[in-house]
Length: 249
Picture 1 (tube, rainbow, N blue to C red):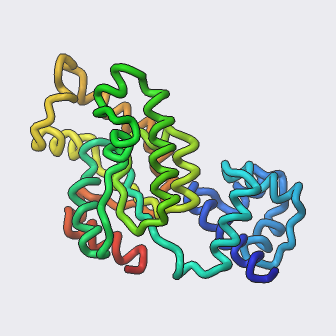
Picture 2: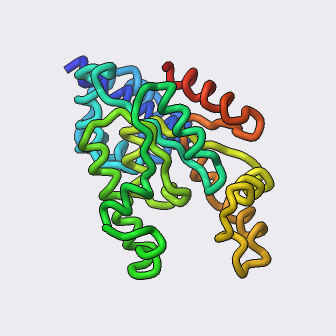
């Protein structure tokens, strides 16, 4: 039982930090005392089902998922596979940095958009044109669940809008090390242009301003990631090294 409580404490702390919440913030959301949340995180609080449910809802998950994660934690973190999920808009460097990070860690590099295409049997443009964004988001969750079920060590480049998919975000926060690759609007824009991708500019003279607004809207969501990497300052190799150091590789 003590191992399970300790696992629950680690799980709660990980989810809280991934969402950028202080202990006080979490306690307020769950209508619990700060002292109680502190005791839970320390593995000393024997929580009732009602309080566990309140804590889970405040973290955007369910009591059953918290218990499952706590049990997995209690069984030994070192034995569990690790998924490093890279977040950021197009031009963040997820593919470039992700591929190099995977080599450094000795694991596979995967792109969630490609897994979604495999799930659908269609290319991304066809998915959006035929079925729309809501359908794509459902496929995104399905592909992510399939990857997690495979228990595969990997570096995963996610789609730019995954932080706006609540169900997908909960899965990442619970089961992956999330890393936000951040940069300015100008840096993102120049990278996309250098890649020769005409989509952001095609028939849209205000595309750069739209990118700026997109970044502003998503920034609070990206900030929930466990780690933030300034790719403009560190460059590709520096970013790879920084991520590897932060996750203890």
